[in-house]
Length: 330
Figure 1 (cartoon, rainbow, N blue to C red):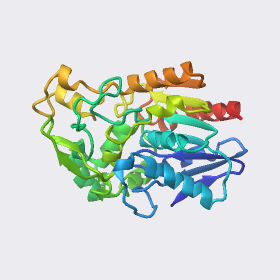
Figure 2 (figure 1 turned 90 degrees about the vertical axis):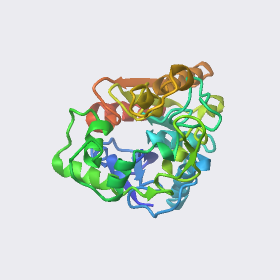
Figure 3 (figure 1 turned 45 degrees about the vertical axis):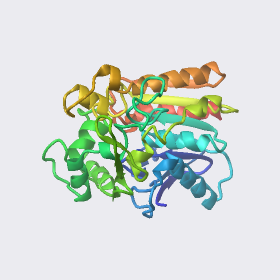
């Protein structure tokens, strides 16, 4: 595993999201307070880590196991603070369900019932979880990703997806850093064992159901479900930060099939009663409210002008909030 590392002391592991790498966090490290050993690994299928297939039927438990193996390899026995962005949010929850943690920080996380095809309470629209998984990836974007396209031509150019979806579209990183982050995105493994993963057919709209390999299948509600966090004992403190302008993890995200059907982008949508857009933020909020009711400590912060990744477009405020939370946990 490739790891960006800084500092000494209490272990803090920061897991990146889909189509990114540990380097998306490295700008936070120089100004971090002392006393923390910061680790930002490239997860399975991304960045410069060894290419290993992802078993989607385990949800994000492969990522959780890889994180545990990394800590063992580094000789770290102490329970870590974990932060997870988007896909990484589901991975840190999977880790906490099986191992001790000092705290959990969710950054615009994939919700407790995975990505796509579910109602507010996590119930799937169809028994086969149609409308989620590898078949929902945009084929033009996938082709441009596989080709290493660095242009800025068209909505599906990886560079334009980065700037329109990863952070507030009015935010721009310096060009040299934008090029670096784009290069990290383009390292993502593609195909059945990477992005988007394999797919299965379905008799239900939109005709695709989850396969068993690759990252979008690992995020399908068929396999990704961390709602059992509510029953965890002892309950680690939780910080949830979220960008109000996030279009990736949002109620009615334009990346999700229910919304795309409602907008007419994917034809044949069966209507609101059969396949409403997924209320992603509502699902996260409801679960964390239950966590608090059952005795857990939950802190929340909404970043009004941020997109999907406040650590970049609200770097100073997010960093102060994050490290302040870690200090309060001890």
